[in-house]
Amino acid sequence: MQTAHPTIAPVGEIACDESGWEGANLVAGSSDVIAYASVRLSVDAATECLRGLSGRAGHVRREYKASHVLRADRRSGVKSLLGPAGPLYGNAFVHLTEKAYFVVGRLLDLVLGQSADAASAGMDADRRLTALATTLIREGPEALGHDRWQAFLAASNAVLRTWKPRNVREPVDAFVDLVDTLAALDGGSRVRAILDELRRERSVAYAARARLLEHHVLQPALEPLIPALARTILHWSGGGGIDVSIVHDEQSALTERRVRRLERQLLPPGRRLRFRQVDSRTDPRVQVADVLAGVARRLAADELRGRGDPELGELLRAYIDPASRWSDERSWSRLGPTR
Image (cartoon, rainbow, N blue to C red; front, side, top):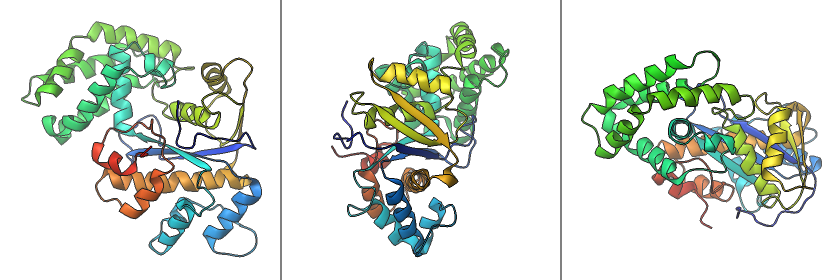
């Protein structure tokens, strides 16, 4: 599997953090995008990077955030962070997740795909289901109207949630009943065909949700950080060819059992994944990853909404995972890697 920077030296730890994760209700947050960033820097280099961004001599005495870089008078800071002469060029990687696309894809995977995508940490996507999810995201809002489309996203998200572990039928019934209503409307023929397929699968969806609730501890459907971490491991391990060590901001979704499962799934026998979590305020490398994630999320969200900065978007392109979860063709043409 090729990556944006295929030659990776096994030196030091890879520092990771995310921006945009707001909980399991992915379609009701303030951000449309999650950015998961990883950087390969020494502690000294990360400290120097933060010092340069803050524009102050001496030690960095506060937790530096992306918001400081993204202020109107800090535009040059984004250029210095992402540009070819900057400290991150060739030493960082960003996986983007378009939240609505992730939810729709995982809903189709649950109901029509026997949860293969979730079980494989996003590494075994079904091409047909991916195409259906892309069609729904691109054509659904116009075919159904904004309010009905939002209702579809909310119902899809509810089917995937596991906060009421004994509640198998209620969210499935609410979803299928809504799909019945939406399929009867005059919408785009391709959207209607997908809804027709979903409305016939009530009993299948009951069984699928029961399996989801049974296995959610190790293979949760609504944890986009897990496939993002999986892609990050593959990138920095050269596709599994070398050991990888990760230091990560504290994140409850990344439990020891889930991390060890990723190690078994992604790395061949004899290769190891070292993983530890820290308070980001104590590690400048994680702070740099946090800054990069925040900058990437803001730039990508602006592109998704049609108000991106062409110059900054072009700089970000060098860091983006080609396998990011992204459906919007126009914005991806400005963000996606060219090689």
